[in-house]
Length: 75
Image (tube, rainbow, N blue to C red; front, top):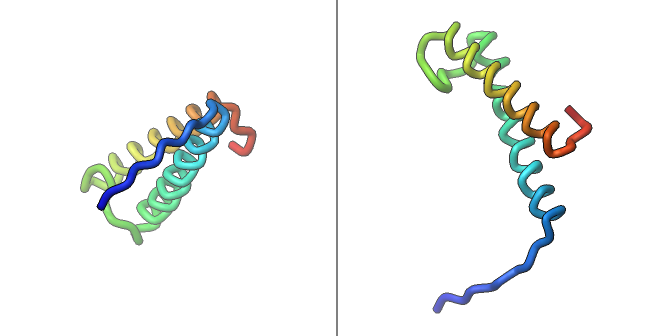
């Protein structure tokens, strides 16, 4: 038997959920970036290390920019 629940969320709560999720992804990207730079991590986007590092750096910066847009002061 399946039950559903409806929850009403205000925009501030939705923003906090969204930014929390993005911070988690950002942390993982930063860890992956450091591992990739140190030759201890696997390829994330492409096999070529230099290009993979560039893509990881771009994604890290993009997440930081979006978090700033959401008003995050920790970045």
